[in-house]
Length: 134
Image (spheres, rainbow, N blue to C red):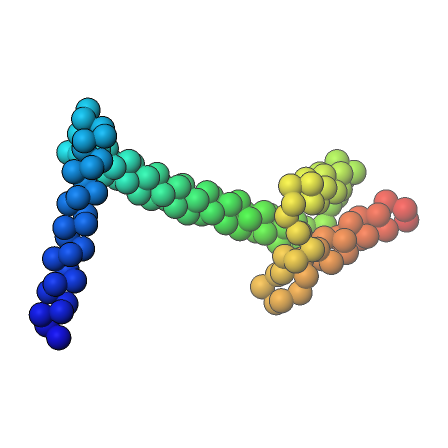
């Protein structure tokens, strides 16, 4: 059995050598060493680009997470504050609009007691309007 495997391996090696010799005869200017070096350079560059894209994606995700956390904290802070002037009420509504326009789902922000902060914001706006109308 070993002898058969050895013969098959030798036959395969001869076929590869014959193919390479035929290729070299047909392409006398082809340099295998340069081709192999080019291949490894392309491979190294490709791997570097993949690593760079992964790192950039991770950094972008971290920045986005920090931004979302800041928006959530701002929403919680605004939910605890009843506006006292029309300008404050307008700023509160503008904040909600900006968050929604940016794709942040502010309605899914929760306070420390697991109550929706958005409902507290609407409640504080309602309280402000009631004081203005009375």
